[in-house]
Length: 317
Ligand code: R5P
Image (cartoon, rainbow, N blue to C red; front, side, top):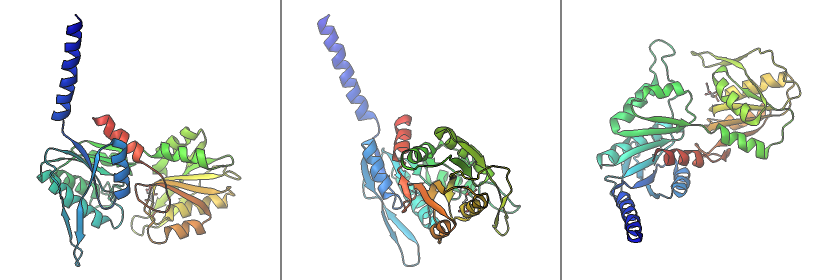
C-alpha cells in the first residue's frame, strides 16, 4: 500500500517532467519599438528575452536578422506600431516572416495597432486599411494577435486567426483614484464613438459620465463639437479617449467644456501618439495633465500595461 503510494507519486512527477520537456519553449522577442515593455513582460512571465537585430539603409529600406535558433519555439514578438508607423510596420513584417520561416510559432503582441482607425470604407473608393493589415499579418505567419484597446473591436473581425484586445481602462481608473484629487468629477468622452469606453471607466470610479457629439469632416479632417445639454459647471473633468494623435479632439472638447464653466480638466488615453506639437496645444487649451499608458513610450506614459498583457499570455497557456 505504502509502496504503491510512492510509486504513484514517482509516476506523476516524472510524467510532469516529461510534459515540460515536450511542451514548446516560450520566449519573448523584443521588437525595436518596444524594448522596455518586452523586458518587463519577459520578467513578469519569467521567459527568456531575445532581441531582433535591425538596420535601416540610407534610402530608408530595412533589414532584420534573427541571431538564434527559434525552431519549435513559441515566440511572443512585441512591436508597437506607433510613428514612424510604416517604419515599425515594415520591421514587424520582416521579423515575423523570418521567425515563421525558421519554424517558430509567432504570437504577435502589438500594444498599439496602427491603421485600426480606418476600419471601414468610410467614403467610396477608400481602402479599409485594417483589412490590408490583417491580410499581411496572415500571409507572413502570425499565429495570434494581442493588442491593447483597439480603436473599435469591430476591426478584429477582419482577422482570420485568433485576435484579442485587452483593455487598459481599469489600470487608468486605478491610477486616477490613487493619484488625483477631483471635485465632483465627470468623465467625458470627446466623441460618441467612445461612449462604451467612458461608461466602463466611470463605472469603475463610480462617477457620472457623458459623451460629447464630435463631428469630423472626412474631407478636410476638421473637428466640430455639437451642443450637448449637460450640466458641467464647477465639475472637474476627466476626458477619456483611446488615443491622442494631434490633440485636436481633446482641445475642441476642452474649449467646449471651459465655455460651460467646468472645473479643471485632465485627460487620459491608452495610446499617446502625440503627433507634432500635441502636448503644447493641449496645455494651451488649459488641460492640466495628460495620463497615458506605455503602449507608446513617452513623457506621459504613467501607466504600465505589462500586467494585462502578461495575464493574457498566462491565460492562453
Ligand atoms: C477618434 O475617433 C479617436 O478615438 C481619437 O479621438 C482621435 O483619433 C484622436 O485624434 P486627434 O488627437 O488627432 O484628434
